[in-house]
Image 1 (tube, rainbow, N blue to C red):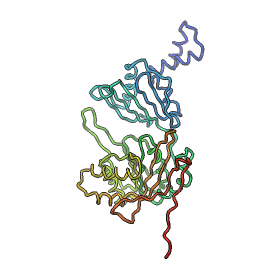
Image 2: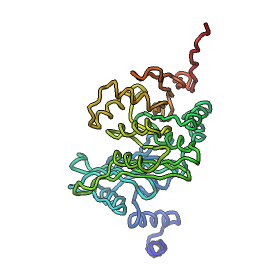
Image 3: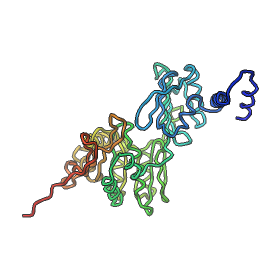
Image 4: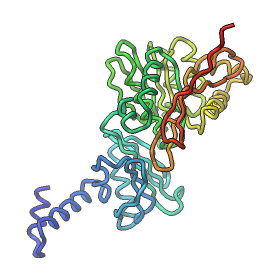
Length: 359
């Protein structure tokens, strides 16, 4: 850095101190940093960076998407920055392997895709790692939940009620999963399993596992499902899976039904009912020829709480429903509303449960 400053100072052009600093920073970022992205990566208010092409860069700040005045010279410059990002983590991106999804050393997630898969040129997406772990208290302060819901969820975790968090992409499911993990008491052994490690649990008895993608030759893959099966041999009290997408849902439900109560996971779904339907489909993906009635009994016996999280049009991430599973009839999975988000009033509300009249 100091050597670059001396070179800049030696130039005959008259530059102000501010201009010198900007020029020095630009040179350093180009040589050893991530070029135009460097300042965006350092900005703590930015949660996501999306580079659609050299001239169109978008960010997410406070839940809102906005375009920023950041540009690359051309596609070659953008490719150079992508290579600089993925090379230190032992990955490469080229025509034979035109897609990379990985975790940076600071915990941020990066996805890069280039031609021929990306028709218009290289595309880069970075989901920045939050330096401040998500807790229920923080979710309350953000308006994701209210105090009453936080108390309810805390009791659910303390009572070792197994749950799933469903929602769309970018709705905040992992943040809520992290917040619930903070409620687990210190005497329990937790094993977390993720594709890309994002959870930040401060727990004395924690083991974190991360799946491994195949190498360039298509070998060496260790998927989530293998890790879930292995976790059962590691004497866990609870298993937390970052997200279930396929056959690992069967193993997760098996774990919940065989002494690992209080386990948690997330999945993509638009509603609590859709989440249960997706679970049925995922179990079938495990390759077992099970009747739907048996799958539903498995789900009803394993899942006790379903949390639905959505991203509202204004960018806010809100838990829109909390449902409990009615276990009075294990032949079908019925949900009982406990909390919901009143969109018209813009606030969370508890559902008054009907009480049986005494005869």
